[in-house]
Image 1: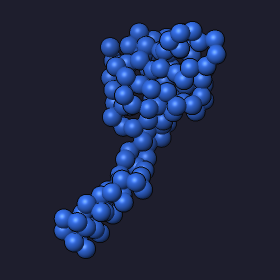
Image 2 (image 1 turned 180 degrees about the horizontal axis):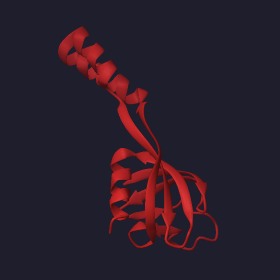
Image 3 (image 1 turned 90 degrees about the vertical axis):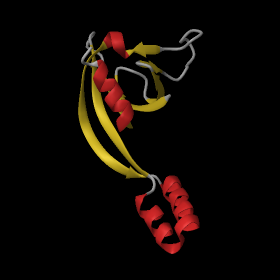
Image 4 (image 1 turned 90 degrees about the horizontal axis):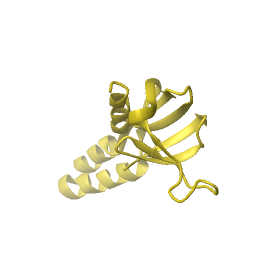
Length: 120
């Protein structure tokens, strides 16, 4: 399960869960028992990249630094700090068949999965 952060558009803003072509929105009062869901396999018309950037996550950087230091000493510590915690995030615009759209950010693997749905 991946996280998608919706920034703007015709859908509720905030963090959503993405799994197997379905976006599950955070439950709010009046959404029903299972909450709001969007099946991208049926609804997605097209997707385009708005921004793509590499992000350094400090938790991963410190963790990889500690592992590198334990295994290879000072050289491993430096390598772990420099290479650890790298993550690519993609901000994209998704347009549905009914004209609704949203601007969101997710990791590159999830974006590739969503992009593949636009070709089906």
